[in-house]
Length: 351
Image (tube, rainbow, N blue to C red; front, side):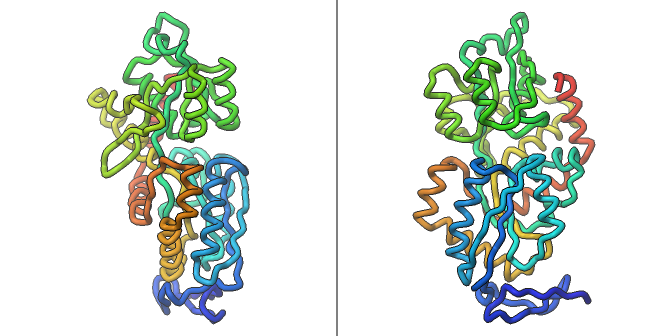
């Protein structure tokens, strides 16, 4: 049976771990003393994923056994798929290569569209934050046009040409609530979309970041028409920073009659739960995974971490390993046929 040599163990001793079995070691005996952990993310510096990853990196250095150095590498491109393709192909399952991932890297639609070379369900998911409720923000001057097709359509701006989580609100609102929307794709970053809103170049878009939502709220020129809802105990709940905007899934409840389209809608609801989280490569031994899970749980209780995360991601719910594992299993069952139904709806709306 083929075996791997793991160097991130107590006393520098190697432990042979066979594929599918073999010698094991307790998490309490794992140590990364004198080692360097490389943390990879597929997004630009200063992005929400980057800010989260750097907070996690600082605290992993404290709470992983042996207190290793943790270095963050940014490799932006194709919504993070380029980085994750490379990381999953080259990383050894020794605990020294980790990644922080986000929705655009794990979404089955993105995986099919980009021919990604990895299977998210095979990664070891450690923990992170779930997707907060996304606000569908509209210019107050355009609100009446949204439901009046005798008027010029509301211009809905998006980053890239595919749908991120919050954008599904406009897709389903147009499909089932009769909204009057024209899609304006092709922006490169969320900041560019926000600036386009301020210039009046577009009328509507979706934001998840509290900074963006609060900033636009303070101008007095914008309002949230709907929100995606935040998953909590099997329910969708609202988010204080968004206010009383209705949850989109509540508005379309009972309006989706076609079973295939209902599957597509349910898929988009699962994708809404995706936030930002830490992963290890497939095949990482249980002892190393357990050491990371213990470190992550300890990080959650650290007051310094709590203060830092409150500044950058205050409303995102904590998501533990078990919930991430289940979500990845559910998403792994999404078929190309279901994704094609999404594309059919998109094409019918000019996307």
